Amino acid sequence: MKNFKSKILSQKSIALGYMEMKFSWPEDCETPKAGQFLTIKIQEQPIPLLRRPFALSAYNQEEKSASIIYQVRGTGTEILSSMKDGETLDVLSPLGNSFTMPKKKETPLLVAGGIGLGPILYFARELDKAGYSPILVFGCRDKSLIPDLPPLKNGRIQFCTDDGSEGFHGSSVDYLNCLDSSELKNAYVYSCGPTGMLKACHNFAVSKNIPSETAMEEMMACGVGACMGCVVELAEGQEKQYARVCKDGPVFQSRIIKWT
Image (cartoon, rainbow, N blue to C red; front, side, top):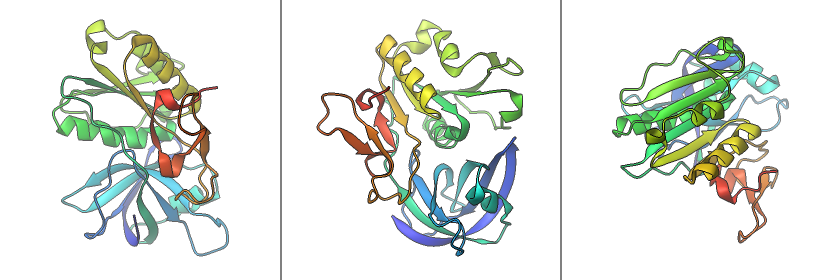
């Protein structure tokens, strides 16, 4: 974990209300992994007071840059979206743990919703480069929320919309249930997005008896495990009753989470 100043390299809208920002990454900072996150101090003014957490959506070793995908939905992200190339960010990263690499014979099924696309997209690209054939499933309300993404070399990206305006008509889990049994053999589910979607992915994995990891999204005040503001309740049989998403996660085996 390092606190550093970073220059904004580019920023663009990728879907209705969603932005992608690329920024410089210092030479002496460790390489971030898919699933990890950062916090940004938006500005020196009292509002917003707290740093804002964002999952990493990409990292470029040669260029020494990293990216985030975020939704504009409050004062902090509105200010962030107005920042221009060359402006300076106050970054604390990398934070949290990361997704587990699957075994060589396993098929990664990656499910994303909303800003959960960022870490899932990062992991899908890493898996793709490593020779896996990941299936990335992104679910959203309608086609206005679908970003323009370059295809994967070895895997594929499937969009799902609630209204059927583009891609598969139905939820991401509806799509998973339509997969051929050969694609579910040796599958490993990874998910990030709204809690309802994460729970549905967990239930799907349990029903198919396949492993599942989930990257939790919770409100974080400190981002380093001090304030206990992002705890989630764990299932019975765990050593402790609660876990801090920022410090113990954000990636968990979905079976250890108490889904209510």
